[in-house]
Amino acid sequence: MHKKLLICGDSFAADWSIKNSGLGWVNMLEQYFNITNIAQAGCSEYKILKQLKSVNLGDFDKIIVSHTSPYRLYVEKHPIHNNKLLHKNSCLLYVDILEHLDTNPELKPIVEYFERYFDLEYAEHIHNLLLQEIDSLVPNNTLHLSHIDWKNLYVFNRFINFKDVFAKHYGNINHYNDEGNNIVYLKVLTELKK
Image (cartoon, rainbow, N blue to C red; front, side, top):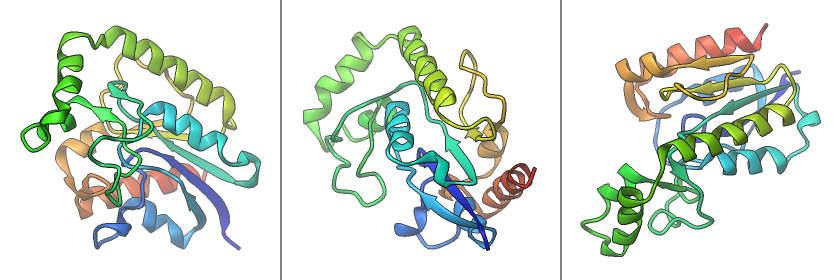
């Protein structure tokens, strides 16, 4: 009988098979685990905390948390992605909003906020507080993942940063090509078997 695995976090861990063909690293784990995947593409760290609080963590043998950028701002409903299958629970990220500005002029105040008022130091501070709360909530054997620059951010006991893999193997399933997804899958599986 397969062990129960909870996967939560951002798009790195979301089930992209609902939108694209192909298997991401999260889907590859299904041969070894009974997976409950509540990760959401584009979500903020606050939404990741809410994901964890929405389930009984004691029901799972293993937990993976994929962490997001400290520069993603929480919103309950995204102004342009709320009807998209994979990104319906997205929060605000400057580059994403800027990319859609030409076709969505109502986003201009959000761009102005990011450019005039958004404070990186404050965002990192709040993000670190959320990371600490998540760490205090989950069991010690939880595996934490990311593929962003982790400078100035909270350090977890069990943490893998795939930043270098992401830079070399970008693609359209979980942000990776087939080779990148396989590298992530093998590393995560090895850690989960410990």
